[in-house]
Length: 340
Image (cartoon, rainbow, N blue to C red; front, side):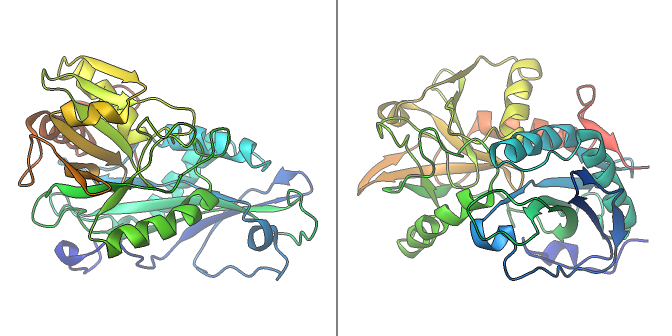
């Protein structure tokens, strides 16, 4: 029975649901994990996460498809990315099979919060892990907690996807050999000042350039870039300090295999941006946010696709991937996991 929620007026915010999953790592091993109705976490004042920001997270969604099934989209890739994040921050790995099982348990337990098909809303899942025992010297914690909660979220674009305006940021998102390629909470803390100042100046997002030479496009605070050339080629930036977006990887596959487009994953120099026909930001929340204008210290680059709508190639990519997610198009094997 679907909850009585005004799905069309939901924003992207936290709505507490009935169950969440919790597993603790103590004495070198993960416990069996449980579903709980308690949404609160009690921590010691000296917990590792509070002292040294030892925390990682993921984000994925569950949907109702056209035929009424509840599904998740490629949770195995979130599980794998969390393994990489854990290793980089000296945290214990939460096994990928258990991660996928926990995702399914949380979705099944909160099935009434999965929005109806066609509403544009989805159930957003947030798996995360943090150091939980007291740590006062600078070192990894010895105990950890892995959790997943979920919250229904509204359509990212209310009334259609309007192209956004972004600025080239003076800040660096990540160091050349830092943590840019993992989903660590500390990366997002570092981006907060940049996004607040961007909003204050009338921009929707930041474009971060590579921190070493400041000549190459990296990503925004929470999404990867995708460009389209004037002859219809899809180009995505390649860098060791970019988070490997699951949405971007899926769009690259869709571009090649479903739409027959040529795709280049390579270093993208900022000097090239003025010559592209379309630009989009890809991530879990929006799939693709179209970019209409990029401002580099007062100098405007206006994409030919304009400020009124997505460009034609971006739109095809968006419609194909969301069609796969929602069950309107046949999915590649293993992409869609049905929740029993």
